[in-house]
Length: 306
Image (cartoon, rainbow, N blue to C red; front, side):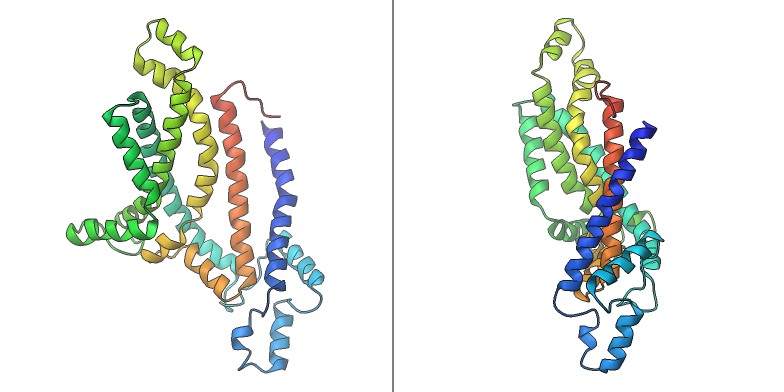
């Protein structure tokens, strides 16, 4: 397993370099510059000095080479918008906040979605199954920007249980985590239900029932071990998405995560902050995919890591 992990990490390095290179070229080849908003007030000489300071002058291939060299040293450079702060500092401050919110949303999605999906599959074609499918459909169809005001109205205004904004206490994490996790829980519910229904018609399940095993043991001891595999595959990119936070949720609840900084970096053409966020997301997605493959091999002994 150790050899598999090392090999996957080594293979991921050129992929990450390619992703960040493409991002850099797209940002530099698009019209304008990071200082274009100030072009009317900054003299041409000062603008040239700024471009030289941030190493975005000269041929674009040289700019990219020097940027990748700095990245390999762990230097994400200075932000061109927040000019007194480095990208390393911004990410070190905001990434833990977004990951805390994302982890809470992921736990909600998994802890609600899998049991509901199994329950609906076990009660196939019943009123319970219909209600579970209806709730899952509503959850998937409700966007975060609509769910957030509803949660705020119910649990912060009508029944003031949780705070409206900020991330000062565990209570303040509840509403944004629910807003982030409930739509994902609906998707996990539908996927779990579909996978369970397919497995419950398999031959080995009929054999287990013919042996007189209790239905609970058939479902949780045999069917769920196989049906959970598609859910694990889906949970990889889901976790990467949730762990990097949500722009909408962080903005509505005024959470100081990566979301607002990423939006501002795009609007202000802050190429190094954009590159840092893209690189962070790519690394998280790569690590979670490796973890997903490991979980696959642990749950299903037929799968060998090579």
